[in-house]
Image (cartoon, rainbow, N blue to C red; front, side, top):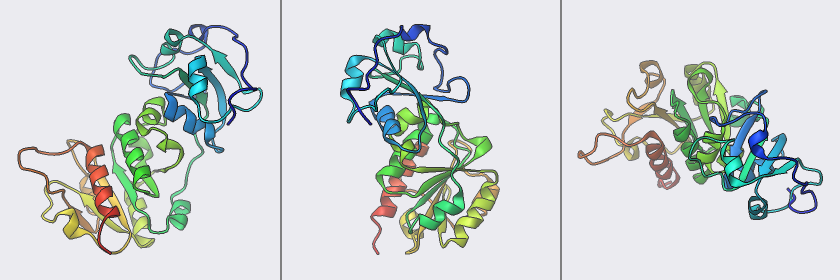
Length: 264
């Protein structure tokens, strides 16, 4: 990435650009990211094809590294950038439009996973939750998250902002059939633990010495019956009876920490 010689002169205000406020899904198949961590991580990812960067001069100066020569930058004022992102979103002077990442295949991830945990999400559709789970997956060195393509949010600015850069570093595998994916994960030597508040065993009691695939259900409905049936064990977090449950992203972070710190 390069910051300096490649800066281009102002060519107009961002408020006149195509596309306006939205979820971070730009037109013509592009995605739009905002905020320093999400934009910087996308710029540094060699697998990401970049289209255009709208930025304040302060935003450009905040980047770690330099933009390449002739990188398409349009300078704008902060209020103009606010028109390109979701309402009341802190863009930090940076809005990047780029292509979505290429699809990642489960078999390829499992080959190089080297025993690192895999997080399977059953119909977790909130982009903030998926982004936060990606961030926790990066923090605890998970190999990937796996979602069903029809019941998960698309790659977007909301996901990227919540992931704080992890969208570029953690593999996100989308599959047609989640039950079949769980069978494939088991064949790769993983013990599949479904997190369910009604389980008898705690996560610590259900923890094996082998690699773990952590299966998380949607808030409210939890895991579907068929998905629970494809788990080797069901487990719960030992939370206080004064609260019914945790947010799915918080529960995932705690479970990943427990996996990372388990006794060998």
